[in-house]
Amino acid sequence: MENGLWELLGSKGLLKRHEFIRILVQCLYSLGFKKSASCLEHESNILYKSADFGLLEKQVLSGNWDSCLAVLDRIFDSSSDHTRDTALYLVLKQCLVEYLKQGDISLALNVLRKQAPLLGMGKEKIHRLACDIVYTKEMESGEADSFLVQDLRKNLLVELEKLIPLPIVIGERRLEHLVESAVLHQIDTCLYHNSWDAVSLYKDHCCGRDQIPSETVQILMAHKNEVWFVQFSNSGKYLATASSDCTAMIWKLQVLDDNKVELKHTLESHQNPVSFVSWSPDDTKLLTCGNAEVLKLWDVETGVLRHTFGNNNTGFTVSSCAWFPDSARLVCGSSDPERGIVMWDTDGNEIKAWRGTRIPKVVDLAVTPDGESMITVFSDKEIRILHLETKVERVISEEQPITSLSVSSDGKFFIVNLSSQEIHLWDLAGEWKQPLKFSGHRQSKYVIRSCFGGLDSSFIASGSEDSQVYLWNLKNAKPLEVLSGHSMTVNCVSWNPRNPRMLASASDDQTIRIWGPGKPNKPEKWLDNQKMQ
Image (cartoon, rainbow, N blue to C red; front, side):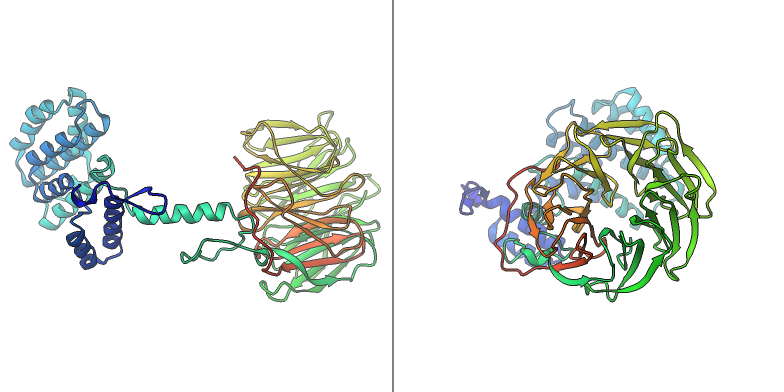
Protein backbone atom coordinates (compact mmCIF):
# COMPACT_ATOMS: atom_id res chain seq x y z
CA MET A 1 0.00 0.00 0.00
CA GLU A 2 1.13 3.63 -0.54
CA ASN A 3 3.65 4.91 2.03
CA GLY A 4 4.08 1.36 3.36
CA LEU A 5 0.90 1.74 5.39
CA TRP A 6 0.82 -1.94 6.38
CA GLU A 7 4.57 -2.51 6.60
CA LEU A 8 5.67 -3.64 10.07
CA LEU A 9 8.94 -3.07 11.93
CA GLY A 10 10.71 -4.67 14.88
CA SER A 11 11.65 -8.25 15.66
CA LYS A 12 8.12 -8.97 16.88
CA GLY A 13 6.39 -7.18 14.02
CA LEU A 14 4.49 -4.90 16.39
CA LEU A 15 5.40 -1.49 14.98
CA LYS A 16 3.66 0.09 12.00
CA ARG A 17 6.26 1.72 9.78
CA HIS A 18 4.23 4.84 8.90
CA GLU A 19 3.38 5.50 12.57
CA PHE A 20 6.99 5.04 13.60
CA ILE A 21 8.22 7.50 10.95
CA ARG A 22 5.51 9.98 11.83
CA ILE A 23 6.50 10.17 15.51
CA LEU A 24 10.18 10.40 14.46
CA VAL A 25 9.30 13.46 12.41
CA GLN A 26 7.38 14.92 15.35
CA CYS A 27 10.36 14.32 17.61
CA LEU A 28 12.73 16.10 15.21
CA TYR A 29 10.41 19.10 15.04
CA SER A 30 10.06 19.25 18.84
CA LEU A 31 13.87 19.12 19.24
CA GLY A 32 14.28 22.01 16.83
CA PHE A 33 15.65 20.05 13.84
CA LYS A 34 13.19 21.50 11.35
CA LYS A 35 15.28 20.91 8.24
CA SER A 36 15.92 17.27 9.16
CA ALA A 37 12.23 16.75 9.95
CA SER A 38 11.16 18.29 6.66
CA CYS A 39 13.70 16.18 4.76
CA LEU A 40 12.38 12.99 6.39
CA GLU A 41 8.82 13.97 5.52
CA HIS A 42 9.81 14.54 1.91
CA GLU A 43 11.87 11.33 1.60
CA SER A 44 9.29 9.06 3.30
CA ASN A 45 6.24 10.86 1.90
CA ILE A 46 4.78 10.68 5.42
CA LEU A 47 3.71 13.94 7.04
CA TYR A 48 3.79 14.62 10.77
CA LYS A 49 0.57 16.64 10.48
CA SER A 50 -2.35 14.89 8.81
CA ALA A 51 -4.04 16.54 5.83
CA ASP A 52 -7.10 17.40 7.92
CA PHE A 53 -5.08 19.01 10.69
CA GLY A 54 -2.89 20.82 8.19
CA LEU A 55 -6.00 22.31 6.60
CA LEU A 56 -7.43 23.20 10.02
CA GLU A 57 -4.18 24.91 11.00
CA LYS A 58 -4.21 26.96 7.81
CA GLN A 59 -7.81 28.10 8.34
CA VAL A 60 -7.27 29.01 12.01
CA LEU A 61 -4.10 31.01 11.42
CA SER A 62 -5.74 32.90 8.55
CA GLY A 63 -8.94 33.52 10.53
CA ASN A 64 -11.16 31.75 8.01
CA TRP A 65 -13.70 30.71 10.60
CA ASP A 66 -16.40 29.30 8.29
CA SER A 67 -13.91 26.89 6.71
CA CYS A 68 -12.46 26.12 10.12
CA LEU A 69 -15.88 25.10 11.46
CA ALA A 70 -16.50 23.00 8.37
CA VAL A 71 -13.22 21.09 8.87
CA LEU A 72 -14.02 20.44 12.52
CA ASP A 73 -17.49 19.26 11.60
CA ARG A 74 -15.91 16.74 9.24
CA ILE A 75 -13.31 15.60 11.77
CA PHE A 76 -15.95 15.01 14.44
CA ASP A 77 -18.50 12.91 12.58
CA SER A 78 -20.81 12.53 15.63
CA SER A 79 -22.99 15.59 16.09
CA SER A 80 -23.66 14.75 19.75
CA ASP A 81 -20.00 14.30 20.68
CA HIS A 82 -19.05 16.41 23.74
CA THR A 83 -15.47 16.86 22.51
CA ARG A 84 -16.78 18.17 19.19
CA ASP A 85 -18.97 20.69 21.02
CA THR A 86 -15.99 21.87 23.05
CA ALA A 87 -13.86 22.33 19.93
CA LEU A 88 -16.61 24.27 18.13
CA TYR A 89 -17.16 26.38 21.24
CA LEU A 90 -13.46 27.38 21.35
CA VAL A 91 -13.47 28.37 17.67
CA LEU A 92 -16.64 30.43 18.01
CA LYS A 93 -15.22 32.13 21.10
CA GLN A 94 -12.06 33.12 19.21
CA CYS A 95 -14.15 34.30 16.27
CA LEU A 96 -16.34 36.49 18.49
CA VAL A 97 -13.34 37.94 20.36
CA GLU A 98 -11.76 39.03 17.07
CA TYR A 99 -14.98 40.53 15.68
CA LEU A 100 -15.60 42.50 18.85
CA LYS A 101 -12.00 43.71 19.07
CA GLN A 102 -12.36 44.98 15.51
CA GLY A 103 -15.66 46.68 16.35
CA ASP A 104 -17.72 44.39 14.06
CA ILE A 105 -20.63 44.00 16.47
CA SER A 106 -23.07 43.02 13.72
CA LEU A 107 -20.86 40.12 12.64
CA ALA A 108 -20.55 38.98 16.26
CA LEU A 109 -24.32 39.06 16.72
CA ASN A 110 -24.75 37.14 13.48
CA VAL A 111 -22.52 34.37 14.85
CA LEU A 112 -24.56 34.14 18.04
CA ARG A 113 -27.96 34.32 16.32
CA LYS A 114 -27.41 32.19 13.21
CA GLN A 115 -24.15 30.18 13.07
CA ALA A 116 -24.14 28.87 16.63
CA PRO A 117 -27.66 27.36 16.40
CA LEU A 118 -26.79 25.77 13.04
CA LEU A 119 -23.89 23.96 14.74
CA GLY A 120 -26.24 22.39 17.28
CA MET A 121 -25.60 24.81 20.15
CA GLY A 122 -28.62 25.40 22.35
CA LYS A 123 -29.69 28.69 23.94
CA GLU A 124 -27.97 27.88 27.23
CA LYS A 125 -24.59 27.31 25.55
CA ILE A 126 -24.99 30.42 23.40
CA HIS A 127 -25.76 32.47 26.52
CA ARG A 128 -22.68 31.04 28.30
CA LEU A 129 -20.57 31.80 25.24
CA ALA A 130 -21.73 35.44 25.24
CA CYS A 131 -20.97 35.76 28.97
CA ASP A 132 -17.52 34.23 28.52
CA ILE A 133 -16.74 36.77 25.82
CA VAL A 134 -17.80 39.71 27.98
CA TYR A 135 -15.63 38.64 30.91
CA THR A 136 -12.70 37.10 29.04
CA LYS A 137 -9.31 38.66 29.73
CA GLU A 138 -8.71 39.08 25.99
CA MET A 139 -11.38 41.80 25.99
CA GLU A 140 -9.59 43.86 28.61
CA SER A 141 -6.66 45.05 26.48
CA GLY A 142 -8.44 47.34 24.00
CA GLU A 143 -7.98 47.03 20.29
CA ALA A 144 -6.17 43.94 19.00
CA ASP A 145 -2.90 44.17 17.08
CA SER A 146 -1.80 41.53 14.58
CA PHE A 147 0.74 40.00 16.96
CA LEU A 148 -1.85 39.50 19.71
CA VAL A 149 -4.31 37.98 17.24
CA GLN A 150 -1.71 35.50 15.97
CA ASP A 151 -0.79 34.50 19.53
CA LEU A 152 -4.44 33.90 20.35
CA ARG A 153 -4.88 31.80 17.21
CA LYS A 154 -1.77 29.73 18.01
CA ASN A 155 -3.10 29.13 21.52
CA LEU A 156 -6.40 28.04 20.00
CA LEU A 157 -4.56 25.50 17.82
CA VAL A 158 -2.83 24.08 20.89
CA GLU A 159 -6.18 23.61 22.64
CA LEU A 160 -7.78 22.07 19.53
CA GLU A 161 -4.89 19.65 19.14
CA LYS A 162 -5.70 18.26 22.58
CA LEU A 163 -9.29 17.56 21.52
CA ILE A 164 -8.90 16.14 18.01
CA PRO A 165 -8.87 12.31 17.99
CA LEU A 166 -6.15 9.95 16.81
CA PRO A 167 -4.72 9.49 14.23
CA ILE A 168 -5.52 12.97 12.90
CA VAL A 169 -3.16 14.28 15.59
CA ILE A 170 -0.66 12.44 17.78
CA GLY A 171 0.12 13.18 21.40
CA GLU A 172 2.72 15.79 22.23
CA ARG A 173 6.31 14.45 22.36
CA ARG A 174 5.06 10.95 21.67
CA LEU A 175 8.47 9.34 21.07
CA GLU A 176 9.89 10.76 24.30
CA HIS A 177 6.87 9.41 26.15
CA LEU A 178 7.31 5.91 24.67
CA VAL A 179 11.03 5.80 25.44
CA GLU A 180 10.52 7.11 28.96
CA SER A 181 7.79 4.52 29.59
CA ALA A 182 10.15 1.74 28.48
CA VAL A 183 12.91 3.06 30.76
CA LEU A 184 10.52 3.37 33.72
CA HIS A 185 9.39 -0.22 33.19
CA GLN A 186 13.01 -1.43 33.27
CA ILE A 187 13.65 0.59 36.43
CA ASP A 188 10.48 -0.77 38.02
CA THR A 189 11.59 -4.35 37.46
CA CYS A 190 15.15 -3.72 38.67
CA LEU A 191 15.25 -4.59 42.37
CA TYR A 192 18.63 -2.93 42.94
CA HIS A 193 17.80 0.45 41.39
CA ASN A 194 18.88 3.08 43.90
CA SER A 195 20.26 6.10 42.05
CA TRP A 196 19.09 9.55 40.96
CA ASP A 197 21.39 9.43 37.92
CA ALA A 198 19.85 9.52 34.45
CA VAL A 199 19.54 6.11 32.80
CA SER A 200 21.54 5.43 29.63
CA LEU A 201 19.55 4.58 26.50
CA TYR A 202 22.47 2.70 24.96
CA LYS A 203 21.71 -0.50 26.84
CA ASP A 204 18.94 -2.14 28.87
CA HIS A 205 18.89 -0.89 32.45
CA CYS A 206 20.45 -3.32 34.93
CA CYS A 207 21.73 -2.43 38.42
CA GLY A 208 23.87 -4.53 40.76
CA ARG A 209 24.92 -4.62 44.43
CA ASP A 210 27.06 -1.53 43.96
CA GLN A 211 23.84 0.50 44.08
CA ILE A 212 22.90 -0.46 47.66
CA PRO A 213 24.75 -0.53 51.01
CA SER A 214 25.89 -4.13 51.37
CA GLU A 215 29.56 -4.00 52.47
CA THR A 216 30.95 -2.84 55.84
CA VAL A 217 33.01 0.34 55.41
CA GLN A 218 33.44 1.31 59.08
CA ILE A 219 32.94 -0.23 62.54
CA LEU A 220 32.25 2.10 65.48
CA MET A 221 33.30 0.71 68.87
CA ALA A 222 32.94 3.64 71.29
CA HIS A 223 30.03 2.18 73.30
CA LYS A 224 30.85 -0.10 76.23
CA ASN A 225 27.74 -2.26 76.14
CA GLU A 226 24.94 -3.37 73.82
CA VAL A 227 23.84 -0.74 71.26
CA TRP A 228 20.05 -0.63 71.11
CA PHE A 229 19.23 2.21 68.76
CA VAL A 230 20.70 4.07 65.79
CA GLN A 231 19.28 6.88 63.66
CA PHE A 232 20.62 9.25 60.99
CA SER A 233 19.57 12.88 61.21
CA ASN A 234 17.17 14.33 58.66
CA SER A 235 19.96 16.10 56.78
CA GLY A 236 22.00 12.90 56.74
CA LYS A 237 24.97 14.76 58.25
CA TYR A 238 24.73 13.22 61.74
CA LEU A 239 24.18 9.83 63.33
CA ALA A 240 22.89 9.19 66.86
CA THR A 241 23.33 5.95 68.77
CA ALA A 242 21.90 4.75 72.10
CA SER A 243 23.29 2.04 74.34
CA SER A 244 22.66 0.04 77.47
CA ASP A 245 25.86 1.65 78.79
CA CYS A 246 23.53 4.57 79.74
CA THR A 247 24.93 6.91 77.10
CA ALA A 248 23.92 8.23 73.72
CA MET A 249 26.42 9.43 71.14
CA ILE A 250 26.30 11.92 68.29
CA TRP A 251 28.48 11.16 65.29
CA LYS A 252 29.21 13.47 62.37
CA LEU A 253 29.77 12.46 58.79
CA GLN A 254 33.12 13.69 57.48
CA VAL A 255 31.69 14.05 53.96
CA LEU A 256 28.09 13.16 53.10
CA ASP A 257 29.06 10.83 50.24
CA ASP A 258 32.11 9.36 51.99
CA ASN A 259 30.23 6.87 54.23
CA LYS A 260 32.60 7.59 57.14
CA VAL A 261 31.67 9.12 60.52
CA GLU A 262 33.54 10.48 63.53
CA LEU A 263 32.43 10.94 67.16
CA LYS A 264 31.16 14.46 67.97
CA HIS A 265 29.55 14.18 71.45
CA THR A 266 28.96 11.60 74.18
CA LEU A 267 25.74 12.39 76.03
CA GLU A 268 25.96 11.33 79.67
CA SER A 269 23.04 12.04 82.00
CA HIS A 270 20.74 9.01 81.99
CA GLN A 271 20.82 6.68 84.97
CA ASN A 272 19.44 3.75 82.97
CA PRO A 273 20.18 2.30 79.51
CA VAL A 274 19.20 4.61 76.64
CA SER A 275 16.69 2.85 74.39
CA PHE A 276 15.52 5.47 71.89
CA VAL A 277 16.55 8.74 70.21
CA SER A 278 14.75 11.18 67.92
CA TRP A 279 16.14 14.05 65.81
CA SER A 280 14.31 17.34 65.49
CA PRO A 281 13.41 18.04 61.84
CA ASP A 282 15.93 20.92 61.73
CA ASP A 283 18.66 18.67 63.23
CA THR A 284 19.50 21.18 65.99
CA LYS A 285 18.05 19.11 68.85
CA LEU A 286 18.06 15.46 69.89
CA LEU A 287 15.72 13.61 72.25
CA THR A 288 16.91 10.58 74.22
CA CYS A 289 14.70 8.12 76.10
CA GLY A 290 16.05 6.23 79.05
CA ASN A 291 14.79 2.70 79.51
CA ALA A 292 11.94 3.00 82.07
CA GLU A 293 13.21 6.53 82.66
CA VAL A 294 12.77 10.15 81.63
CA LEU A 295 13.08 12.01 78.33
CA LYS A 296 16.01 14.39 77.77
CA LEU A 297 16.57 17.16 75.20
CA TRP A 298 20.09 17.90 73.93
CA ASP A 299 21.67 20.64 71.84
CA VAL A 300 23.29 18.93 68.87
CA GLU A 301 25.97 21.55 68.22
CA THR A 302 27.25 21.80 71.80
CA GLY A 303 26.17 18.46 73.27
CA VAL A 304 24.66 20.32 76.26
CA LEU A 305 21.57 19.00 78.04
CA ARG A 306 18.78 21.58 77.57
CA HIS A 307 15.83 20.03 79.38
CA THR A 308 14.57 16.94 81.19
CA PHE A 309 10.88 16.09 80.73
CA GLY A 310 9.30 14.50 83.79
CA ASN A 311 11.38 12.90 86.51
CA ASN A 312 11.81 9.53 88.09
CA ASN A 313 10.09 10.66 91.30
CA THR A 314 6.78 11.28 89.50
CA GLY A 315 6.99 7.94 87.77
CA PHE A 316 6.68 9.38 84.26
CA THR A 317 8.57 6.92 82.07
CA VAL A 318 8.87 7.34 78.32
CA SER A 319 8.73 4.48 75.82
CA SER A 320 8.87 6.48 72.59
CA CYS A 321 8.90 10.05 71.29
CA ALA A 322 8.53 12.02 68.06
CA TRP A 323 8.80 15.56 66.72
CA PHE A 324 6.38 17.82 64.89
CA PRO A 325 7.64 19.51 61.68
CA ASP A 326 8.18 22.90 63.37
CA SER A 327 10.93 21.45 65.64
CA ALA A 328 9.22 23.33 68.49
CA ARG A 329 6.78 20.63 69.65
CA LEU A 330 7.29 17.01 70.57
CA VAL A 331 5.13 14.14 71.69
CA CYS A 332 5.97 11.16 73.83
CA GLY A 333 4.20 8.04 74.97
CA SER A 334 4.56 6.24 78.26
CA SER A 335 4.66 2.54 79.01
CA ASP A 336 2.50 3.42 82.03
CA PRO A 337 -1.17 3.48 80.87
CA GLU A 338 -2.02 6.14 83.46
CA ARG A 339 0.51 8.56 81.96
CA GLY A 340 -0.74 8.24 78.37
CA ILE A 341 0.61 10.51 75.62
CA VAL A 342 1.82 14.06 76.18
CA MET A 343 2.66 16.90 73.79
CA TRP A 344 5.25 19.41 75.05
CA ASP A 345 7.09 22.42 73.73
CA THR A 346 10.88 22.38 73.96
CA ASP A 347 10.78 24.30 77.26
CA GLY A 348 8.82 21.53 78.93
CA ASN A 349 5.39 23.20 78.89
CA GLU A 350 2.59 20.70 78.43
CA ILE A 351 0.46 21.61 75.37
CA LYS A 352 -1.88 18.66 75.19
CA ALA A 353 -2.34 15.22 76.74
CA TRP A 354 -4.21 12.06 75.86
CA ARG A 355 -5.00 10.08 78.98
CA GLY A 356 -7.72 7.82 80.32
CA THR A 357 -9.05 4.34 79.86
CA ARG A 358 -8.83 4.60 76.04
CA ILE A 359 -5.05 5.15 76.22
CA PRO A 360 -3.37 1.88 77.21
CA LYS A 361 0.35 1.14 77.30
CA VAL A 362 2.24 2.89 74.45
CA VAL A 363 4.72 0.61 72.68
CA ASP A 364 5.83 3.04 69.96
CA LEU A 365 4.61 6.18 68.22
CA ALA A 366 5.39 8.44 65.27
CA VAL A 367 4.20 11.71 63.73
CA THR A 368 3.82 11.92 59.96
CA PRO A 369 6.22 14.33 58.18
CA ASP A 370 3.38 16.80 57.51
CA GLY A 371 2.46 16.82 61.20
CA GLU A 372 -1.18 15.99 60.47
CA SER A 373 -1.39 12.47 61.92
CA MET A 374 -0.03 10.57 64.90
CA ILE A 375 0.47 6.82 64.65
CA THR A 376 0.60 4.91 67.92
CA VAL A 377 1.15 1.27 68.77
CA PHE A 378 -0.86 0.35 71.90
CA SER A 379 -0.69 -2.76 74.07
CA ASP A 380 1.37 -4.77 71.63
CA LYS A 381 -1.17 -5.49 68.88
CA GLU A 382 -3.21 -2.33 68.18
CA ILE A 383 -2.29 0.50 65.81
CA ARG A 384 -4.21 3.78 66.01
CA ILE A 385 -3.90 6.51 63.40
CA LEU A 386 -5.25 9.82 64.68
CA HIS A 387 -5.75 12.84 62.42
CA LEU A 388 -4.90 15.60 64.86
CA GLU A 389 -7.13 18.28 63.31
CA THR A 390 -10.27 16.33 62.47
CA LYS A 391 -9.88 13.90 65.41
CA VAL A 392 -10.78 11.05 63.03
CA GLU A 393 -9.19 7.83 64.24
CA ARG A 394 -8.55 4.57 62.40
CA VAL A 395 -7.63 1.37 64.21
CA ILE A 396 -5.64 -1.55 62.79
CA SER A 397 -5.39 -4.77 64.76
CA GLU A 398 -2.49 -7.13 64.24
CA GLU A 399 -2.64 -10.77 65.35
CA GLN A 400 0.90 -10.82 66.74
CA PRO A 401 2.73 -8.46 69.14
CA ILE A 402 4.27 -5.36 67.53
CA THR A 403 7.72 -4.29 68.66
CA SER A 404 8.42 -1.18 66.58
CA LEU A 405 7.06 1.32 64.07
CA SER A 406 8.61 3.33 61.22
CA VAL A 407 7.08 5.86 58.77
CA SER A 408 8.22 6.44 55.17
CA SER A 409 9.78 9.80 54.30
CA ASP A 410 6.75 10.82 52.22
CA GLY A 411 4.34 9.92 55.02
CA LYS A 412 2.26 7.61 52.82
CA PHE A 413 3.27 4.28 54.37
CA PHE A 414 4.44 2.79 57.65
CA ILE A 415 5.91 -0.54 58.70
CA VAL A 416 5.67 -2.50 61.92
CA ASN A 417 7.90 -5.32 63.14
CA LEU A 418 6.06 -8.30 64.59
CA SER A 419 7.40 -10.91 66.98
CA SER A 420 6.14 -13.52 64.52
CA GLN A 421 9.17 -12.76 62.30
CA GLU A 422 7.26 -10.61 59.83
CA ILE A 423 7.30 -6.96 58.82
CA HIS A 424 3.95 -5.53 57.72
CA LEU A 425 3.66 -2.49 55.47
CA TRP A 426 0.44 -0.45 55.64
CA ASP A 427 -0.76 2.58 53.71
CA LEU A 428 -1.64 5.59 55.83
CA ALA A 429 -4.70 6.49 53.72
CA GLY A 430 -6.39 3.22 54.68
CA GLU A 431 -7.05 2.02 51.12
CA TRP A 432 -5.46 -1.39 51.66
CA LYS A 433 -7.45 -4.17 53.30
CA GLN A 434 -4.31 -6.22 53.94
CA PRO A 435 -0.68 -5.20 54.45
CA LEU A 436 2.29 -6.18 52.32
CA LYS A 437 4.33 -8.72 54.23
CA PHE A 438 8.10 -9.21 54.37
CA SER A 439 9.86 -12.11 56.03
CA GLY A 440 13.16 -13.95 56.25
CA HIS A 441 14.71 -12.29 59.29
CA ARG A 442 14.66 -13.73 62.82
CA GLN A 443 12.67 -12.16 65.66
CA SER A 444 11.00 -13.84 68.61
CA LYS A 445 12.38 -12.51 71.92
CA TYR A 446 13.74 -8.99 71.46
CA VAL A 447 12.72 -5.57 70.16
CA ILE A 448 13.90 -5.46 66.55
CA ARG A 449 13.57 -2.26 64.54
CA SER A 450 13.33 -1.73 60.80
CA CYS A 451 13.29 1.33 58.54
CA PHE A 452 12.54 2.57 55.04
CA GLY A 453 15.41 3.75 52.88
CA GLY A 454 17.07 4.15 49.54
CA LEU A 455 15.81 6.06 46.53
CA ASP A 456 12.18 7.15 47.10
CA SER A 457 12.05 4.88 50.18
CA SER A 458 12.02 1.88 47.84
CA PHE A 459 13.71 -0.46 50.34
CA ILE A 460 13.24 -1.81 53.86
CA ALA A 461 16.11 -2.71 56.17
CA SER A 462 15.77 -4.60 59.44
CA GLY A 463 17.85 -6.00 62.24
CA SER A 464 17.57 -9.64 63.22
CA GLU A 465 18.26 -11.99 66.11
CA ASP A 466 20.58 -14.09 63.93
CA SER A 467 23.19 -11.24 63.95
CA GLN A 468 22.50 -10.22 60.35
CA VAL A 469 20.98 -7.23 58.55
CA TYR A 470 18.19 -7.90 56.05
CA LEU A 471 17.30 -5.76 53.04
CA TRP A 472 14.12 -5.97 50.94
CA ASN A 473 12.89 -4.14 47.88
CA LEU A 474 9.28 -3.09 48.49
CA LYS A 475 8.23 -5.05 45.41
CA ASN A 476 9.42 -8.40 46.75
CA ALA A 477 8.52 -10.21 49.96
CA LYS A 478 11.81 -12.12 50.04
CA PRO A 479 15.09 -10.55 51.20
CA LEU A 480 17.14 -8.89 48.50
CA GLU A 481 20.35 -9.06 50.56
CA VAL A 482 21.44 -10.53 53.89
CA LEU A 483 24.42 -8.65 55.35
CA SER A 484 26.82 -10.48 57.64
CA GLY A 485 29.33 -8.90 60.01
CA HIS A 486 27.81 -8.52 63.46
CA SER A 487 28.35 -11.32 65.97
CA MET A 488 25.18 -10.84 68.07
CA THR A 489 21.57 -9.64 67.67
CA VAL A 490 21.15 -6.58 65.41
CA ASN A 491 18.64 -4.39 67.27
CA CYS A 492 18.16 -1.44 64.97
CA VAL A 493 19.05 -0.09 61.51
CA SER A 494 18.92 3.36 59.92
CA TRP A 495 19.22 4.32 56.25
CA ASN A 496 20.79 7.69 55.51
CA PRO A 497 17.96 9.87 54.09
CA ARG A 498 20.36 11.90 51.93
CA ASN A 499 22.71 9.15 50.82
CA PRO A 500 20.77 6.13 49.50
CA ARG A 501 23.93 4.01 49.57
CA MET A 502 24.66 4.40 53.28
CA LEU A 503 23.18 2.32 56.12
CA ALA A 504 23.96 1.98 59.83
CA SER A 505 23.20 -0.97 62.13
CA ALA A 506 23.38 -1.32 65.92
CA SER A 507 24.05 -4.61 67.69
CA ASP A 508 24.36 -6.35 71.04
CA ASP A 509 28.01 -6.95 70.08
CA GLN A 510 28.58 -3.32 71.26
CA THR A 511 29.33 -2.02 67.75
CA ILE A 512 27.70 0.08 65.07
CA ARG A 513 28.46 -0.90 61.50
CA ILE A 514 28.39 1.56 58.61
CA TRP A 515 27.50 -0.10 55.32
CA GLY A 516 28.37 1.21 51.85
CA PRO A 517 27.99 0.08 48.24
CA GLY A 518 28.78 -3.55 47.56
CA LYS A 519 30.78 -5.14 44.78
CA PRO A 520 29.04 -4.93 41.37
CA ASN A 521 29.60 -8.55 40.35
CA LYS A 522 26.46 -10.17 41.77
CA PRO A 523 23.84 -11.30 39.20
CA GLU A 524 20.87 -8.98 38.79
CA LYS A 525 17.64 -9.82 40.59
CA TRP A 526 14.32 -9.01 38.97
CA LEU A 527 10.82 -8.47 40.27
CA ASP A 528 9.08 -11.80 40.77
CA ASN A 529 6.69 -11.43 43.67
CA GLN A 530 4.38 -8.93 45.34
CA LYS A 531 3.86 -5.36 44.19
CA MET A 532 2.69 -2.25 45.99
CA GLN A 533 -0.74 -1.25 44.82
